[in-house]
Length: 90
Image 1 (spheres, rainbow, N blue to C red):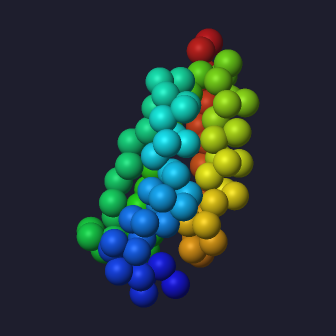
Image 2 (cartoon, rainbow, N blue to C red; image 1 turned 90 degrees about the vertical axis):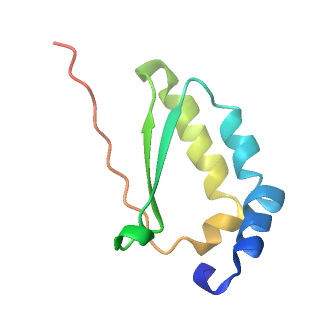
């Protein structure tokens, strides 16, 4: 489990093996992201992430998710909840 890994081991996987940051940078500014660390405030998740993108960038966002889900770091994900909201422009 990831919580059994030291912080430096987690960072090594994220930065060196999974190249999480480099992958995400390829999708900026089309995909905006806000990260909330939530274990520190008693929530059951390590973090919550809010993404925003236009309808025109939806395929690029799906590619970002696909790429990140293939990484070593994703093997440590116990649970994912994916909620999608669509702005109604009428």
